[in-house]
Image (cartoon, rainbow, N blue to C red; front, side):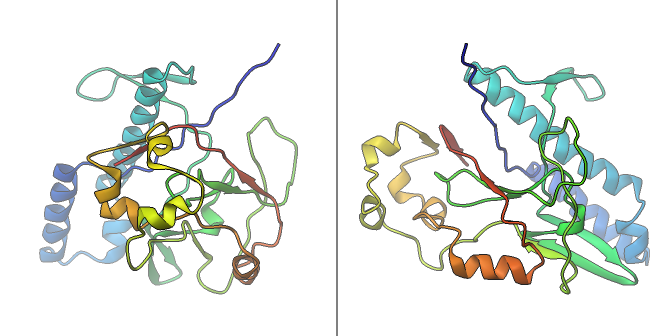
Length: 239
């Protein structure tokens, strides 16, 4: 008997209207003279906003799994305006958030604090390269998918969450050198509009590898476990 196991990886934020509501809320806080701690730490409004982001991601994972006929662990969610089904999340990496270190407020953008990593750190690569999962040193045997200790560095424990974009968009002439044609690309990539004219998509191509130079950067940032799990992409929805 053979059983195929798939990972559904979602990179999501929140809708435009909610962002605008939060912007208005921040302006109200500024006018009221609230401190950063009052706004970003132990604030029910911020906690609710973060919960909405997580719920949105879990709903999208469930909907995508249902669309491709995959079975995913989940549950009914009844606290919203209408009942919905959401998936369980095995690994989660925040890439845009604030955090206090002593009296200093740190903004993490396109990166994460490595001491917040729970079950592995997800590192995003190019669209048709599924993420790498960085796994820390094991501490005890559990039933979790991944487990491990934290790693730290002298830069507020910052660790990148992706390679970022190219300064200039790639071209499909560059892309074809990697052995992938436009016709074969259409079999695994779902994108709004035409892929060859999607500038945001092209700024993430071509592939990028975890090179020797990048391994040195990882070590400087405290990661020296050499335990990375690559996930293979099968179907990519690029928004």
